[in-house]
Length: 351
Image (cartoon, rainbow, N blue to C red; front, side, top):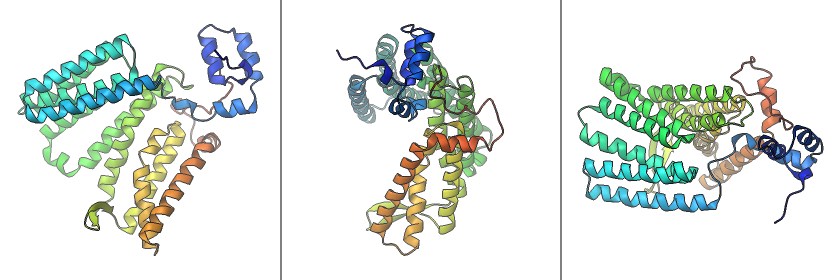
């Protein structure tokens, strides 16, 4: 078995070894002082949002199998669409979560079962309580809370939040149905804002991104971003769908709307930098592609060339931002008021 030389370990690996009691504090300090430039560079690229829910390809393999199985069961639900059948699938997903989540601690397979549990619980309760959507939503929230109590994995926090937002939407639709119908985008954006605040709260409890609070925050940010962005665009940008060659549906916007979409993307990017969360930015890429592509076509560029240039420009921007993330972020947070809710600048020597 090959052992990586200690001088080539990253600061994160050294910190993990220190926390595990493998090395002493004095040894950790000495090893951090001996980090090579390459090791330091390796440590500064993207380690704040480690995907700790993937342990290896075995988890990916099992998750694929669970996903295919659930798709098959979903197909059967169209044939046997009774509420009892839907609840039975939800219970089956819960049993699998007990094994993969509680016993094996396999995060990714449990994530797939958790999504299935949420979906089928929602469908089943909605079938039985079609006349009482608020009660059905409340039962779903209770079910997801019990699910978290059993498996206690970080992504469950996001699913509980989704369930709570669904309950809030059901209550709001019951109280003011016309408001929800006409202002649905703002309602969605408000749900995203509430979820974002939850993510910021968890981040504030773990500024160095080294505990489960950071994982909780990651999933909340990942949930908040599409709600915020899609809700805002839905209200601020009036999109239409046209058919290219009579086959492919493409979103069509005006020139002013395209510029507004880029402004929204820019705002989200700055927020992502301040919060040190790339997940917020990823959710805005779809609209960035649409806006840039539209503006290029309106400037007289052919459709093929516009698509090519759009991919090159957006791809290059992502790569450059990824490489220069920390310097850019440090420059931005110097210009904003200091707050305990804003993660501190990255420190490669943190221990």
